[in-house]
Length: 488
Image (cartoon, rainbow, N blue to C red; front, side, top):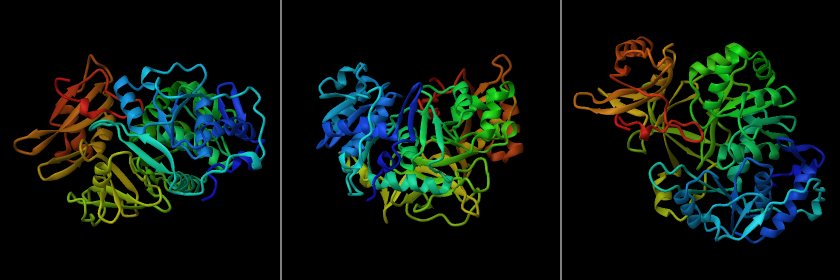
């Protein structure tokens, strides 16, 4: 097992991290992380109070150097969820910035302040802690969203981190010359593992915005940043701002790569960004348990609405409802659950052997719960979650995602979500949840049904429409469909 972060000593003078006006070179990062790693040596797991700060990045690097599994904690977690995570993961300590106020749920843990000196001196390779060589050694315990119960802790080994980041190096042509900018939270896979450890493994730089803003994106892409990571909500705000912000359009045009993840980016926003900047947004697909599975390649064909092809080393298949039989054929009617296997997979759910066993099909295939179709050349098009986005109506399997994209093309629709509802004749009917562009003049159900039928097919038209002021979303911008109820 090679080192996860060789640049700490191989390129000590290169810029590594920047959060606002605070920055560290690789040598300074090693100088700050090394003594902290010494303090937590021997720990099995350490919680990291994951604020969007330099301290969080230093704390996670220290944990990786020490061989302790980092448990990133969302600072916005409620008392019940936070208490569950602490009890379940049983960390030996909590790492936090010196000025951070920790909630009562963390009060019983030994606290270790993450000290980042104003001028942390570099360390030589000989004095740096020796990273674990076992590829199966846990690197992170990341808690899932817990939509069907308390969050589960996915134990991610070092080989899953390295294999995913190296596969993305191949897919995105990611090098040490790239500087990544993003404003993602640091308590999950996207913002922390891809967005911080990813650049550090390559020997490049990450500039964190602290809080996402189009002004911050413009500033960083105009001053040397080459890559942007975001979620669909961020790219939607970018698309909305582009018509009146020529500097933003110019900055995006100069980027080498724009990447969207954590949820599907509507085709309408793809087209608006491409039209204004000449750039395409690359989508990829992953989960906490699998890290990254697929991506549109930097040298591949731009195809909005897809998440590309399997990454190097990842096997992917679509399974029938029985969870075992592989779907044959390709195209919009060959619908199945995505199952994957490869070095990117997690080890298990912490303290949940039952959930771990249920997550896998025979042959070591991980059941993602996501439903998709594949184009003839292997490009994957995700329909959505099996539990909430696959609608079985009149003998058809209908994906909510394509209907949502069609609805968003209607000029009177600002936001859209689609779910299924029981129907005595069809089994399920298509239900649309709409945020109108003009609340005083919402589109009618008949208008929306005809709009969808003309673009897709009649059996995919919404038969019921609910109007909302806003769609319920989580911190990552994902629509919380379980909250969409007629009386909710």
